[in-house]
Amino acid sequence: MKKFYTLAAALMMGALGAQAGQLFLAGDATLYGWNLDDAQALLSTPDNDNIYTGTLYLKGEQEFKILASYEFGGTEYGAAPDASLTDGKITLASGINDEGYGKIKVAEDGNYLITIDTENLSATFVKSVYQESEVIYSSLFMVGSATAGNWSVDNGTPMYQNPENPCEFSAMNIELNEGTFKIANALKGGGTWGGKYWFFRNADNAELMTLDQEGDLQWSIITAGNYNIVANTATGAISIKAAQSSSISDIAAPDAAAEYYNLQGVRVMNPANGLYIVRQGGKTFKTLLK
Image (tube, rainbow, N blue to C red; front, side):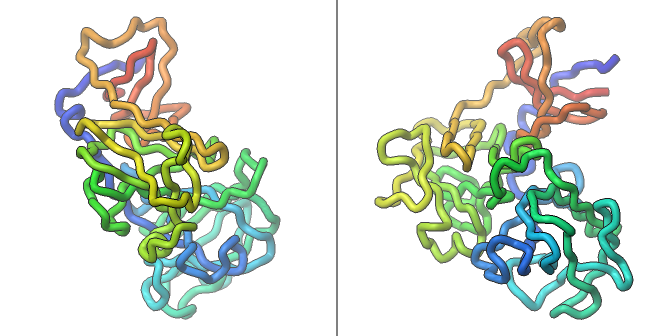
């Protein structure tokens, strides 16, 4: 049986994982081709900064490669010599300027859950269960005076994609200041401040976000504290709620169904040992499973 421990130290950690490493896909297989202004970031996982993941739409039998930054000329990853995608897996090699590796192809059009391990030089490309529409974004970034990175787009607070619903993104238990923020959908393009790279507060409803909204409308944080932010790029819905912290006496009765999330708000269906956010019986708290 798993044991529950509420950690005072964990509650003080606040925005653990508020920064994350990024890899970028580019190529004819992506919806944006070789245009790095639109290149989507795969985020490193909070428990291993060598593993990156995200879901994106890829075109079958078209080439792409993986970049360590949103500029050409740096470290790049592709298929190792003589390697090909087999049963969703491929061995990678690194290089620069198309040398030292080959381009990668998937067989069919579709949304793919992508995992890249830069330490072991391996990757998986598995068809997502979600195929209702083309998945355009693999991560979002909160930018503004309310965030730790202020108005630096490159230091935006990442919002992590839900692998079961890849149009949903969240930043859980993130420390925010009094101030405002908006949401970038691409790091390099966001740095141009072009409207198509930003989600703004809807002019008529603060619980909705609108791409390229006129007037640079932003969300306001009135009271500094820790917040849970959840946004859906398909419906435009956004939820901004103060995060709840609990003591042992606040934990719900054990017969209430518990939902487990990692520290970036991605739901975990079969949690192993580690630190999680738990929702149970109307309560939300951090817990260590042993």
